[in-house]
Length: 222
Ligand SMILES: O=C(O)c1ccccc1NCC(=O)[C@H](O)[C@H](O)COP(=O)(O)O
Image (cartoon, rainbow, N blue to C red; front, top):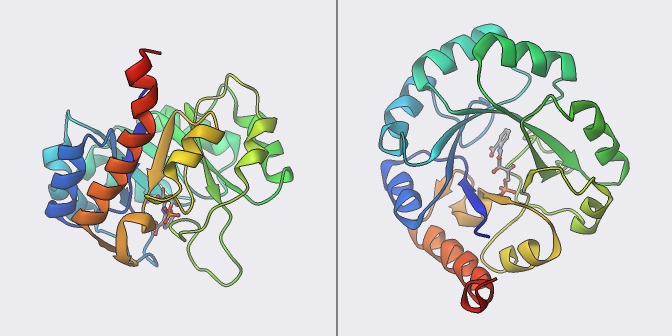
């Protein structure tokens, strides 16, 4: 089955256009001011317009206040809220009730212990995203371009629907798909020439690598 592909931290019409042309299923906008990928909600709204109805528009937020969400939701009109902070299950429920949008809850992973928290969100979050824990000293909870030990995901209940992220790029995405049960993959740094600067050539190479990984299954009809 073809994986969902989310290109995150988009800031230019060119990168969005290329991601859509190549079949991105999700496009992500970062609302974390310290990030080099930060975009103002009104700017994100304009950038996202070509994606509407073609790919899911994802608003990435970190421990948001209701005021933050009011502004982002009213301007961007996202399809999904990606909660990338330490939002509790109760906070996730409140956000879902207030905005009526699906929530993708992120877990930052370094050890098996980091996955034990997932259980409390089952039946609450609509989807999970497993990302690498930020390295010491990083101000960013995501978008650090580093991977974690994917074998840890083997501990998860097989019915959990998740996307995988953290340091994915054209060279490791096939392995990531082959060695996990991820139904979606998410990339940011792996298609950038420097933090916050997406490359259309690297977006192409990433999609090429995913298509190549998918090819044997398609060819055998399985
Ligand atoms: O990308 C950011 O700058 C960012 C900042 C704050 C919270 C989340 C952020 N990114 C969220 C994502 O979904 C990234 O795609 C994910 O962390 C993977 O990033 P990378 O390892 O660079 O591919």
